[in-house]
Image (cartoon, rainbow, N blue to C red; front, side, top):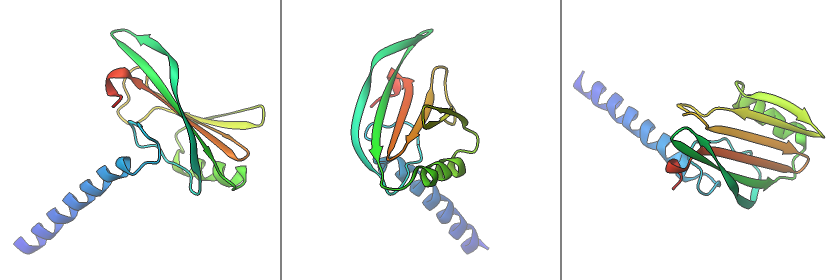
Amino acid sequence: MKEIRRTVSQSVIAAVLLAGCNLSKSPLEGVVHPIPVYEPSSVIGMEPGDDADDWGDERTRGITWTLTTDDGMEKVVSFYKSELPQARQTEEDGSLTFEYLPDEAVKGELITIEIRPGEIKITEIVPESKRP
């Protein structure tokens, strides 16, 4: 019985450690929250937000990463619909945008993923104090 408990404990510890590693392996440099990234894609740019917004005592700042992919828009959209079923979706000018709050979000946090043919723009807005 002790052996089973130890094996279960070791499995739980391993799962927690592996879950924590996902963020460090993200292709999105400086990301705070785990954000699903469509593969195959390549990050071609990172742009810090120019402005910070005030939310009471805390200021927020966004970063936008631009990615490219050779896959069709339908395939990319299908991936994000599967990964982010809770996200609000809006269509405008040939693009589809997913918008959602990260787990344990605080006031002012938001993640958007805009999909256009051949391009994905991921924006993460968080309090400045959370940025590395």
